[in-house]
Length: 298
Image (cartoon, rainbow, N blue to C red; front, side, top):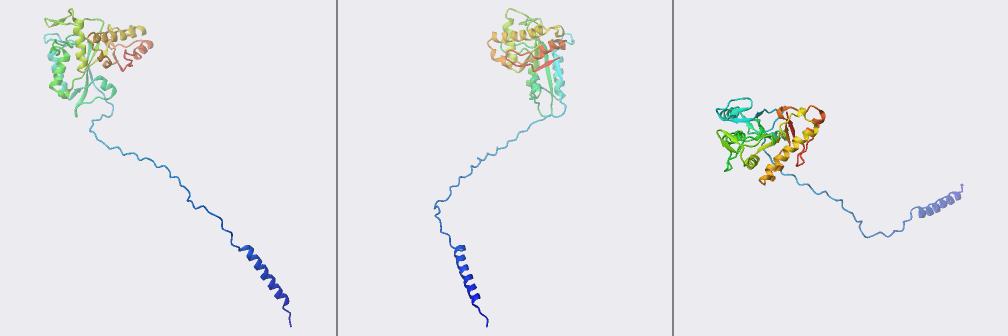
């Protein structure tokens, strides 16, 4: 008969080992104290919503492509018995020309609006620029004592035509020479002669022109040949002309108009300086209000 004592001992040993191991391996951990406060959560900043702009709509005429505009230049305006030349046009012929331009679909725009791109014409019409050279002569613009423009002057004819045809628009510029002539303030035999009050009359005429939208540009002080003028002479001619123009406005206490004067230079007879230095003096000229040259017309 076999003895089982070793097996019993072994079983007891395994039981003891398992009992001791169970106590060590599977004992319940002692609970630790926990906080009763919930963690604080800092909210993320939210972006402030931007209001959606309210759309608005406009109707506008736009231009595209290589846009060009014709520029017509006039000089003097004579009575109907005056000879027609390259420098003179009669009052009747001028009226006929304006009517033909209107019938052809043209409307006058200002030179400055063409330069800065703000010009506009009524729908279906085409822009044109009108200029007058060698101002000031009474046949170009003369203002009566009651403040109305004289009907024999070219600008007045244009002014009245634009009133009768509003879609033609009243826009014109005049290139002025302040140093080589006197203004005719006395009317006699279809001609204006310089009288004792010509300066006051010229000042009133300049102010009326600017108040009514006529643009005034620099044509040098004595209509010099710029190809024969050195840089100092170019600057003198432009600055002296600007100084004289402002003198007449200040004579009648209308210096409020001075900021409206443009810095466009019209070269006499279209002749430009012949040297780089004189050309730089022309292009770099700054007017008394600090405006740089807007354009040089040749």
